[in-house]
Every structure is written in structure tokens, then in C-alpha cells.
Length: 269
Length: 120
Image 1 (cartoon, rainbow over the protein chains, first blue to last red):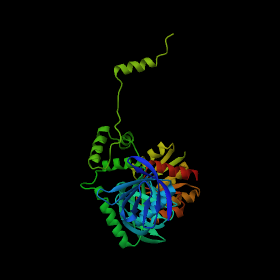
Image 2 (cartoon, rainbow over the protein chains, first blue to last red):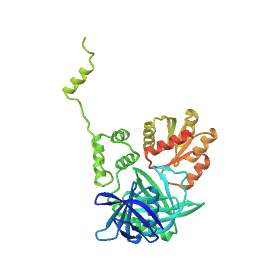
Image 3 (cartoon, each protein chain N blue to C red):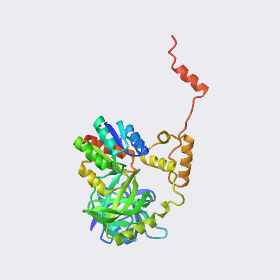
Image 4 (cartoon, rainbow over the protein chains, first blue to last red):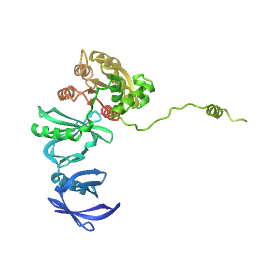
């Protein structure tokens, strides 16, 4: 159907080659000379301009393919539509909310949704959106108004470059339920077990979500750094936060005080 | 940068919004804990923008939005709510809200939205 230029990683080096994309699979030219049926693809990830295509096998083989976005888009579309994945035709809206701000120009797009091993892909005529399952922060079967009627939708919350993004999937309720169960199973490690957070910990969590640093949190909640450290410890234990860096609080030594005092003295004549 | 009135019935959310907006260089000219107080403060302070909680005791955010719009049809109000309530969003936009933020929110996006609305 189309022969496209690519670079494929081999033994740590990028090798120039070509891929002949067909309906059911792709043929990688020399020096690889490999035929890859799309059905053998079990996972697909994109990092910048590199596609990580995981093929069925023991152990699985990962092809790293680099090319220009136009080529990758074509390749992704064929792979997503034919690979080994849970796939459904649906409408999706992504992003509907970003960082708590509603996207006023968000619209429903008709396309396909594929749930792969490590990510969910939304594919429409004009858009390809990937949501890594490790970045999914919440899934919910809920209702949303669609053309003046309340419709069942699946709401997916996920992180995208540090921002919380909300997307919606719309399709018949029976299919939504299957999608919901599939996603719930794929993200079950993130479910909270045990007690709810106490009010202060919940407020600290909300402030972290909003982007406040430790100093701002202490000031806003009027708590000491030792109290905040205790909250952090409990949140760390629950796996709700991770340490980004440890900042030092310091005071001047007598030598430091002397140095600073001397430094502000006027120069001697 | 603008003069902003923050309306929310919880001190925690007002403090959070105040911190976020202050860090963006905005001037917080006042705070209100319900819709009635919001309308009164708007008339008194004439801010450039209002962040308005939707669910509040006594007079809710939508009613307060209507009151402010009656006083000043050019008022810039950004609605703020805890849940994505479709009806509320539609009603608020119909009533003249310029933007809508959903709790919990992230500081950079809130500042971006405020900047957009102030510039509109």
C-alpha cells in the first residue's frame, strides 16, 4: 500500500530502512527482511518520534521505529486498528478538562479505542491520543449530557506531562461496561485499600495537586514542618506521593555570621 | 494582571485560590463566602474578574452571577465547582460566565484560564 522511510534500532544503533505498510501487516526491508503481521503486535508506545512496537513471543520482541510524524501516524493507525487488543468503535472527547479547566472547544470525535498492554489509544480521522495505563489516575462510569440527553460515558482521568487530563468515551452501555471492567482490571494496582485520609492529610493532598510547595502548604494550613513531615510520611506509605527532592534548611555558623558582617562593611580607606 | 474577587464558602478553597492567583501576580481585592456577599462586594470593589464557587449556602453561584451581570453586563466571572455538572456549566455559560474551572485544579492551568478571560 505504501513504502515509508524509517530508522530501526539494531544492537543499539539506528539503521536506515524502509517499511512496506499493507492492510494486514508490514514488511521491513533489508537489512531486517522481516514480515510483521499486525495481529502479532501486543503493545504500542510512542516516545517523541520513536514507536515501540512489542511483538508476541517468549520473550516479546520490541521494535523501535523512528520516523517523521506523518509516517508514524500512518503506521500507528494501521497497527491500532489491527493489532491484538481489546478494541471498540466509539466516540471520544479528549481532553475535556485539563488541569481543572474545561476545554470549551472540546468535541466528540468518532473513532476507535484500543486497550493495549500498557496504554489506551484513541484514534479518529484527525487525532491519535495515547494514554499510558500507568498514568491513569481514575476511571468512572458516569453520565454526561450529549445533545441535550444524559448519556452513559466512561470518564478517564490521567496525567499528561504533569497535568491532570479528563477524557470521555461514549458508546452503548454494554460496551462501556466491558471497557470499564477492562480498565478497572488494568489499573487495579492503584485502588486505595485501608482507611480514608484524615482531613489535614486530604487538604495537604489537595494542595500538592494544585502545585503548592512545602513552604506554601505549611503557611496555608498553619502547621509546622514536623507536622507536615508526618503527613508526608503517611501519604508516602500509602503510595500517594513520591519524594521529588529534599531541601535543606540552614542557619549561619559563627564563621558565616562574621563573613556576612564583614562583607557589608564599607571598604577601608 | 488583574484585581480579583474570590467567592467560595470554604476558607480552604479561598486560601488556595488566593495563593495561586497571588503567585500569578494578581491583586486579590476581596473575598466573599456566599452569593449575597459576592454581589455586595462586586458593587463595592468593582474587580476585573470574579472566581465564583457554584454550590454555596443561601444564594448560590449561579444566582450571584445573575446578580452581578444585572449590575454590570461586562463583568468577567469564572465559575468554579467540585464536580463536572453539565447543567450548571450550560446554565453558567448561558448566564454569562466567561470560564469554568473544576475542583481539584492545578495552579498553572487556573492562571492560564484567568489570563485568557482577563484578556478577552
